[in-house]
Length: 416
Image 1 (cartoon, one colour):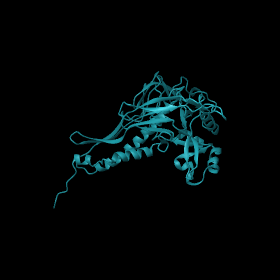
Image 2 (cartoon, one colour):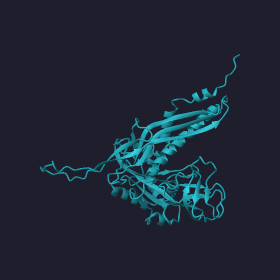
Image 3 (spheres, helix red, strand yellow):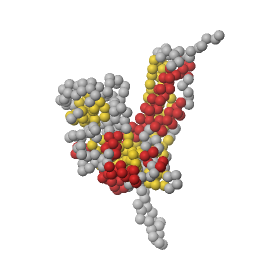
Image 4 (cartoon, one colour):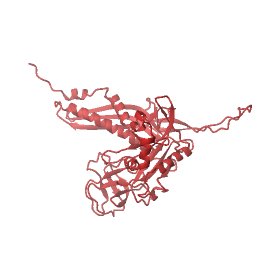
């Protein structure tokens, strides 16, 4: 009787299929928030995706922009020659670079359970890459400083500093969004129905807290029940909350509150902190986990967070620590929620961001599709599995250096 031969380390690493990379590309891009809102030039989708696979890390992909035609034209027999309109044509560049991530584990090379680790890790990498794609898109918009991006505020607030706990999203704010996008001349998205009819919509994506508050609005709820499309064509079945006057409403949610999302950055304290603490530790002591990634997206010299009833000025951060300045904060306790309050000098409450968009709001430049990476180390006792891609994002700007196809609305983001 022949002996049963265990797999060697090299055989195990070879068992990770070469076709695994396209699966990650497909699964991650379907799982990300913007999956069905992207398309090539002329497709009138929210994400303008431009692929130049001959480009490598550090290169740039050029995107052409053009203002809308505003010529007067001619009537009757009046001569058109010499009276043509003239559009302003410009361009901007999207820089692409490597994005890489991997997970590793230690296991005896002849342990068959390692195949389970491969399968679980593949699922984790899909989720990580999908979250990364989504976050990068949001940050491409939220990280555009004024006056390039149009910013509006809930209720009667006029700035982040004037927002208080009464400034939650209402139907009046949705009206304000629709009105402002129209005034901006934002290009609407094309939505084709099964009948072939083409409709034009804008989109608005909000944080989970903002969406919850809006869903409690009786007028809004009745409108979705009574006035929306019946059956499988209802926008709710595409992951949307519903529609309002041609505005498709979406919500975007974070994972376990550890870092929130770019729309509502949040985390929680790892342990108790004493009065006057400088370093505010978040979640756990694993420095490789980036729990502060969504805080301070514009990279200002200072930003503010709220813990309990206290707003704290901060000057920097690491992956899992926020550094307070000045160090005069009160005592707080493990598990207390940490929420983002913006970068203004006099914040009072946590903030929540929403992004309203039309077509071609952001360009995604792709230089290399995702592919698997793998490594054996420490005499085959350590196995790593990861993914890498070459891409970049940038908000679309017109020849006047404005972002014409999206706006940012800020509202109250306090804890429920």
